[in-house]
Length: 400
Image 1 (cartoon, rainbow, N blue to C red):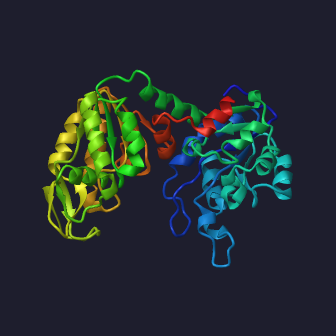
Image 2 (image 1 turned 90 degrees about the vertical axis):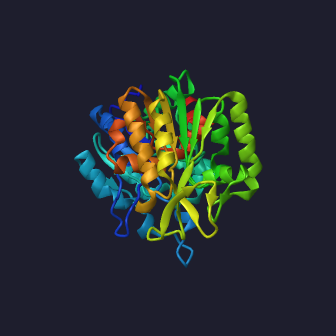
Image 3 (image 1 turned 120 degrees about the vertical axis):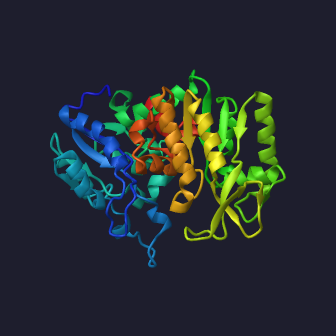
């Protein structure tokens, strides 16, 4: 960060959109911990910190009377834990902009931290409203974007606000810098063989990424619900498995393009199938191309685990985005775990690995493997769009 923070109020956009349980306790503070180096650097260099973040989608889940559910979505739930992480008291402002926010920001002294209320309580945030952005910008002297997870959104606090600061008064935080650096390692001269592992429910969600991978990688491993669209497109019987019938031709076209470009696509030979979408359901292994009626594929099988692991272990560069099965259910999490272990083993053997996307990140965290892969991205959607070749609004705004 090439800014002098001494005696300055740094307005920092962080991504504190962390999961909470029913008692509003944080269940995974990864995103908060990832922001700490930037916050500490500003304070150690004589600056005060004003934090902006969103939490959830409060305007999509209004109360019956049409008002925002402050109790559920307030960032005040995070204040106590953030105080512990930073080792100092964090002040909380019950509004994002307004008289109280202005007074609290003005009173802030070097080394102090102020957390503003959820930016998404304001409809102007997601609209990228100029006037709202201007009011936010007025709270600080410099702007720091350290929220890679929202860098693909042209929202007020992530993008528009930057235009109210001169180029020398806006910068990326350490987390953003690290995310951009690691994404560029994949995009420019990666060591080969380069393997992309992708999963999740729908081909339609990942089609742009898959198309992009055809120009980047040597191998594509496909798991999760999306694998059954490919299986059916090739004439397989998939029972009641998840399928996008309107994407069958697209799946076949992708396989043809891959063959023409010399990219190998690996689909699961076998699956763990269940008679209902339930962890307690009856389940057994069968061919992914011969699933009986009334049964659905909820995970990849042992043959697929072994085949995928072999490809991964022979790779020099690995990107993983998306689970191999219904990872939330223990009986259908084995495929995702097997991939996580294979990625960690390949990394130990010298490969570069990047893990991005909620379930993939959850898998390496739960298995204690986060430190055994090269990089864990905090922004699945942002990383995906960057790899797709898109220019992210949050990054463009800083560059100007």
